[in-house]
Image 1 (tube, one colour):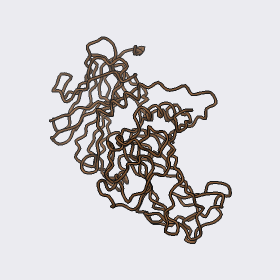
Image 2 (cartoon, helix red, strand yellow):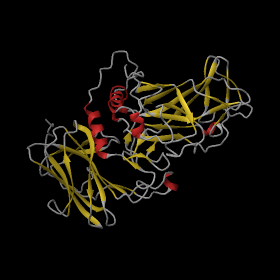
Image 3 (spheres, one colour):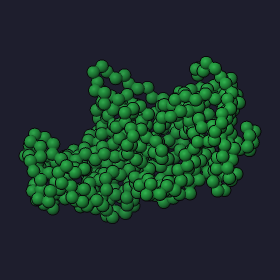
Image 4 (cartoon, helix red, strand yellow):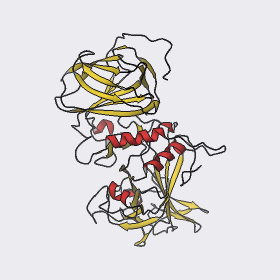
Length: 459
C-alpha cells in the first residue's frame, strides 16, 4: 500500500508556472540542430493544488515528482501556451504500484473545463517505476491557458505519482526526414517488462563496476552503410562489420531479427556493429577481435534503461581529417608488452613493439531523448553527459557503449590509413537488435546494480 504522508494539506501557493520551452534553439547556443517545439511542464511547478505532496524522484534526470494522488486531487498551472492551432502529442510521466483503476485528466479553465487529454493509469511496477503515457490532441485553445491536472479514480486511496507533462507539436527538428520515432506502445511494453525483472543476487567479492559485454569476431566487409546510406549498396567507403552476418545496405531492424547468424557472443545479440576498414601498405588489416562494452559513466547508474530494438547511433566523425600526434584525443594506441616504441613518419599512428598490437577504443553517447530511434545526423537524438546525469533534451540514461578493437599489426613508420582517411576519421556505428529479455536482464543485473559481468551476463 502506498505510504501516506503524516499530514495531508490543501495548499495555495503564489507564483507562476516554471517550465522549460525547448524550441528552435540556435546552433550558436547549443551546438545542436533546432529541437522539436516541445513544452515540458514539471508537475511540482503548480501555482495551486489540492491533495498533492512533493517528493524526490528516482526517475531519470532526478528532481522532484508529485505524489500521494487520489481521486479528486488536482494541480493548477498558469499561463501555459500550447502554441499555434494544430495537433499535439501530449505525454504524462507517471508511476503506480496499484494501477488504479483511474486516469489523469488535463483540462483547461477549471477542474471541470474542456478535456484536453486523458492518460489511463496502469500498474508500472512501483511508485518510482516510471513510464510515459501519450495521447493525441486534435485541437487545443491558443494563447496562454490555465491548465488543470485532475486525478480521477474509482477506488479509495492513492494510486498515482506524476513527474511531468509534455506537449509536442512536431513542427521542427524532432520530426520529418531522418527522425525515426519509437513505437511508443512497444517501448512502453519493453520498459514495463524491464521494470518487472528481478535482479540476480550479486555474489560477495564481485567487482563493483557497471559493465557487461559482447565479444565479437570480424564478420565481413562491404562498401555499405545501412544507417548513413540505407538501401544504397556501394555508396559508402569500405566498412568492416561485426555481429549480425546479414548486415548490408538493405539492413533493417526486421532483417537483423530474422537472421540469427552472428559473430558475437552471446548469440542473443543480433546487433550490427561496424567501423571503417584499416589498411597497411594498401592491404586491408581486419580486426582480430572487438569487445563491445556496455556500461555506465554516471555516478549513479541505477536509472539506466536498455536500448529499444532498432535503436541506432554513430560515434566519431568520418569527415575529420586532422593530424593526431602523440597525446591527441581519439588516439589509436599499443596494447601488450613493450607498448608504443615510436610514431609513424607522419606522426599520426603509433608504432608498437613486436609483442604489442594496435588498439582503438571508441566511446558512444550515453544519454537519449527517449523519443527517436535515429536522427538526421545519427547523433542529435543522443548526447554525452558532462554533468554526471542525463537531462534536458536527452533525459534518458542508456548504457555507455564502447568498441575496443584490436588489430594483428604493430604498425610501421610508413603508417596506416582508414577507408575514411586519416586516423582522426575513426568512427563506429551501432544498430541494436538484442533480444529484449537478454539485454534487459543484463542492464538490470550488471549496470543497475554496478556489478561486473561477462559476455554471458554472469557475474
